[in-house]
Image 1 (cartoon, each protein chain N blue to C red):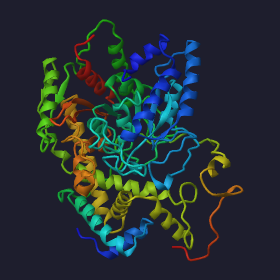
Image 2: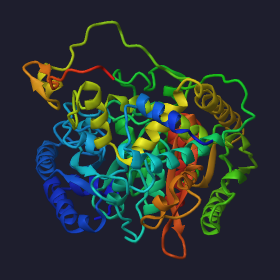
Image 3: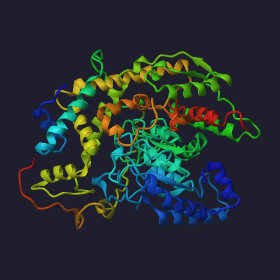
Image 4: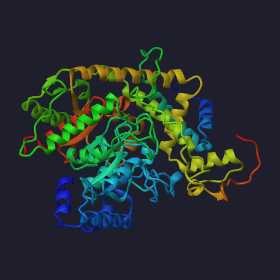
Length: 96
Length: 493
């Protein structure tokens, strides 16, 4: 399946990725290849019976009791922090 | 230094060597050898020596666990508290976990400790360990060839004698394939047998922590310490369930056989008495003739010992590869959505918060990771969800049903691990998407959550190792490991 530039751009936007124009051409080619690879799924597979879980398995819920979360210090350890908050640059603009 | 875990246990218990001396030997060997193969990306000398000292104290007090004093290597997508864990990606370059993965914690309780973190394909997406920010891992058998992936660093570390055993992860063959390429044993447990808590997610319905070691017995010893329910992983096997019963009884039988004194290693029994093995023709189509011949020759030993060869067909496995890539990439696109530079990982400033997230992800992910995120996002998007993701899930149901039927008539399936031996360095990258096809024998076990073991079964004309894969039904991990042990030690006391 050949992917159009519009479809590519839309997918990139959903994936929160972007590509420079020069990079896009090459990536589009590789992306079309991988989608063509996925196209090989047999056309005989008719309507789907969803089975995303592989074992039909457990997915037990734990008991509904409060478990202490990780400490604020641990939560902030790997991010940029300001006091007890994650710090994000103060920029003003439309959300994308 | 390539000793079995049992021999190491005896050596330590007899105080012929201390854990500190053993660890220093490994660290010394890593220092001289690692530059040749690049198996480790982070060598944890201080932590390892501290672990060894604690182990020596326990040994002096007479407290011996199965792994007390024996160090391990850990793949760099498994969280180790206070040891940088990066998934070999720029986006997690200085990530310092605040917790240990449950599997790691359990091995620490059993007396082991971390020697270092091993190289991998970024976010476990790859087959060669050439897609890493730390450079490629080379095959210790011949450094012109890759070590396989994505757990190539772990496989190479064990193969080169730089660790007695290593943890890897297997989502689409990433423990078994590098084990086959490097000539070591690699075990992927049943999905749910080992907690995924602390395994940085790629495709959550297939990810599983596995073991790379010198033998099936070594894999069994390590696996036995990790397995079991974990309340932090709701997909882990539930105590009291039939699956848990099967897993536990299988491992009990495994260790009863091992511990039986003066008994030669014999062929394990199947569910109904004689072991029934299936050799599906489809797995041998397109296999390199040397790989096929080596596996079929090994199968004859099983038959000589009394195993019954049952003809089987696996045509339901057709298209498993495509189902795997669609499901894995769809799950990856969701799992990797968390990497936005806000709470952890690298951050690249943009003009606003949205731009910051995009710039961060662009700078942080490699081309292969971006490609797979794009495929997954596409497969889940409106207009394509039914065509790709839904179909892939339907295929997955059929594959699982196909295996359930198959395992009514056989106890184990024996096949080549991969249709070929190791790629030359750079070969897979040149093949691009065509290289994905080499995963076709591996991914069915991941789609169906089955236990699967790769054992070395010879070498090709170029001297490259060949792997044989033994796969069992869900939670028959004990039987799979027993069969692997029989192949490696059969007939010996």
